[in-house]
Length: 316
Image (cartoon, rainbow, N blue to C red):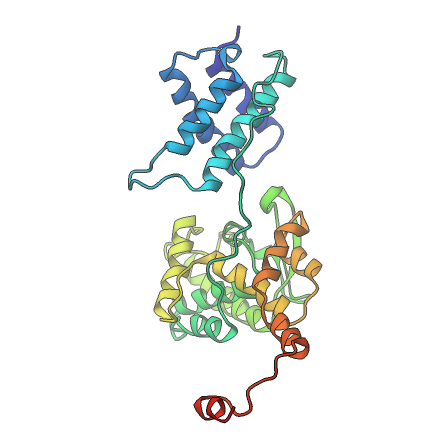
């Protein structure tokens, strides 16, 4: 019998050989690490000793687990941890490490369809974009970054990995290479955002480091880390004092919602966001309220108040 630890190693090698992203590989390694700790504490050394009853006990362990602040794991986190374990046991079965899959009928926690917590209005977005001091090189760079997020809805890591050659100024497009799911996609970028990116590229970027091919560079002339990019955007949103908090993904939510509000076909928004399924994009139709309000006002039989405010109410 192959030890469980060795099976995990073989599985992660298999994932890597199938050209999954580094993020997927790291995540599955981390999640299986939690599972292995639980198994080691119970002397479960080989996969043949794992039964469905034991996996249900692990599921309860995940449910009862508390973080350092005393809070339980979010339902999505629980789902992710159990989902990876279920995928792992399916792989063990297909690779003939075990005859029967004990996780085949393991029921995962139900996930509600959550709406984005915050969405910026067009006015609020403009307030955030106006925060950087564009009289400074750093301010021009920061404005270009914010404009790119707002115009394209690009993911944080996709923007960090943008190269100079991915920008086509004549066509007004940016090419996202190896985005989520290792998929390429070509995105339009608005005229105003493009002007700011060109200004940064031509005037500011050469002063940071001319030899690098990464488009957006930090103050040390290197590519942004994920944390640095998140902090940059979050700080600008906080500085706008609009009463809303968020970071890079807030602009992604905002772009999608405002495009739908202004009549964009959902399939074009899906293409912009790089969603493989239309269901992922449909969540934004739930927060795109303008058209719903318009239809409601035109079709609901309740009569509007004549003369708004207190005087209008008194006259009724």
